[in-house]
Amino acid sequence: MASSGVRHIGLLGFDGVAAIDLVGVLDAFYIAGGNDWRTPSERYATSVIGLSREPFRAESGLQFVPHMMLDDVPPFDTIVVPGGPGLREEKTNAMVAAWLRSRADTRRIVTVCTGLYGLAASGLLDGRRATTHWEHTAHAQTRFPKVRIEPDAIFVRDGKFYSSAGMTAGIDLALALIEEDHGPALALSTARQLVVYMKRSGGQLQYSEPLRFQAQAGDRLNALVAKIVGNLAGDWSVEEMAAQTGLSSRQFARRFRDAFGVTPALYIERLRLDEARLRLASGREKIATIAHSTGFGSDDAFRRAFERRFGVSPSTYRGRFTEISSEEQHHDTTTTA
Image 1: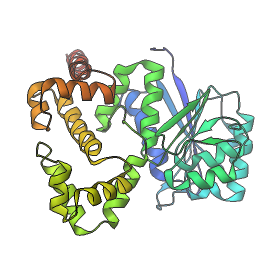
Image 2: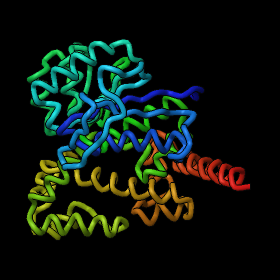
Image 3: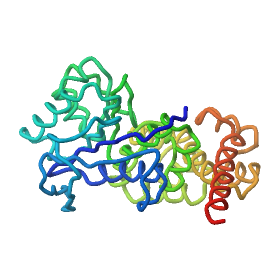
């Protein structure tokens, strides 16, 4: 539902912050705010909050100059806590946790990646659901046993508290917040500017585990994955894939499922649907052409698979992008006249 009035977003910064956790969310709100740094936004005002007035350095070495410090900040609509190894250090963690407790009446409190460690330490998440980067979920659950960690979520909302998985998942969550504030049209337009999916399907393990698998797999399996991506319309039966890897069908299916957590058929369907979704957004090809070129045997099979995964029909999905393109064209015409 759209909402009027400027929303003030405060983003915490500290030595050892993960720069992308901070900047990814910051840029999403900047783009949603109007994408013009010379003009104050009528939607969002963003501020980077330092633990002191001194510049702080990200773990990658990038330096930031905060707009303000913890002791002199105004009320915020939304507070964002990025992750990074610096937040897990005792002194910084305690300072951030105490400050968040003092701001418990904020409308929304958001964590990105291991920013969860700051909010969870405050006790505000006790009894609630949350997530963090897949590599830290087990440790976070041990350290904060009163928080119900969901290891495969891209982001989680529990009441006024929002948490997201690793790094770029903060952008996914920022888009969800923008949609919550101003509706799907603005969120989708922002996603297009960022060149990201508005709503990624599935959980974060689909991104971590396949990549780890490809890094550790032998040449035969790596070559197979590359072939599948390069020819989605091909005949990728288990028998064909097994033959290309020199394994029996049973051996191949078992190894594939152990590595990816899904069957070969489901994995290939996801690849095909992701490619189809990108082509639908471009608006250039007929839906029937997209269906067949991505490997679906019929338009009906494509439609049913698309609806099952994304919850909307291919035509409805494309219509959302067409609507945004029309709005953007109208905006460009009116502002340049």
